[in-house]
Image (cartoon, rainbow, N blue to C red; front, side, top):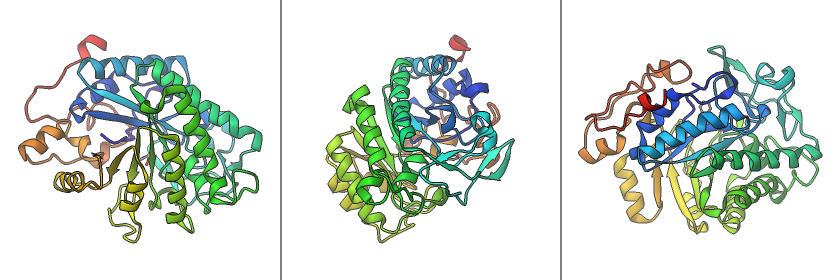
Length: 349
Ligand code: 8OZ
């Protein structure tokens, strides 16, 4: 199950028993990658997203991972810093969001149930960068403490790491900007630090080489991501998770990009994602163009997606009005075909 932002955390970015129930309903996925979760206060860009840097947040996650494990599941946490995809009203002290360079993204975020333009960011000082790398390491320690089986570094979708990678958002003249090697340094330092904390087999990395979401763009994406995957292959995370098209959009967003070549470059597990049908997933695994396929959006309305695939049963459709924020409606109330799911609420509510 791919990470899905649902914006239902409580005040202070604290995960709730309702979130535990939602994930416990979906344990038949095999491996769940939990929603993008900010590693520090500055890393938040949307209302209602959870964090993994305070005591109450860790306690909330602990209850959630316990529910998932009790029901027989496995769960990684996706570590997130939004960088410039934020708004002053979500930032500590109402300050500007941080980014590699002071370039405002042509993108929106949601606050108070409405979409608003993101704020103008300020460029990070060189000495602040190691502090953010350290925040990823501490977040990893917190995630393992809270019982997660591992962590996924979110390097996709135009957020902070992706902002460093791409020349459309990184104008730095220090060792974190300019050449492709320099732009990939931030990601490399984070993955190295996170692996040192958790071990190779408990770390994954997600990238979105052709996605233009959140104003992500690069003049040479193929060259950039060839280097990125070369670096990652050396660092040996357990898996590389690749959005092979436009995020939340078409698979064939950039048909010229050679994902098969990227897959061959990486010797660990390759998880393919974006717009797969069960048939295409089976074909890709048989052909060796993927080791695993992650499904995201179909899991929203189909907690028993795997069983439905197996039974060739029709899939339930998603209510677009309850995707972000709110409570149980459109979150934990989607039915399974047969009620064989693990019920955990009474024990933990
Ligand atoms: C949808 C809404 C808000 C954030 C991503 C974390 O695209 C997200 C996200 C998705 O990676």
